[in-house]
Length: 85
Image (cartoon, rainbow, N blue to C red; front, side, top):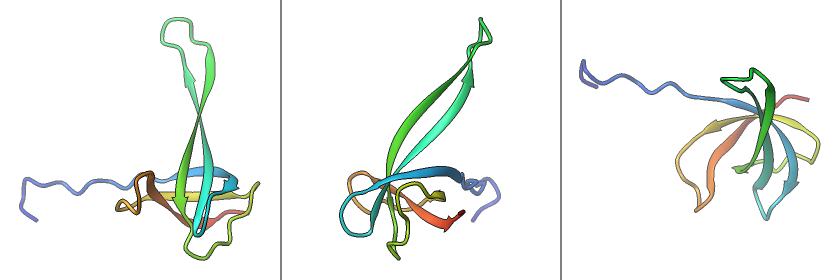
């Protein structure tokens, strides 16, 4: 790495498992609370992600820590780092 390259910081998220989708794949729901710029009202946005679950231990209702990784398929860009329950 040269001096002008800065390492990209890894973003991790806490999400809730909402289902399974095939072998070694879980569907998680990430909820983000935002605030409107003008009216200052808080609102939540939700998005579902497909994540790689190597050990197939995540069950619906679990809270997990997900981290980005290399693309594993067309829609899988995250993997489960640990189960938080």
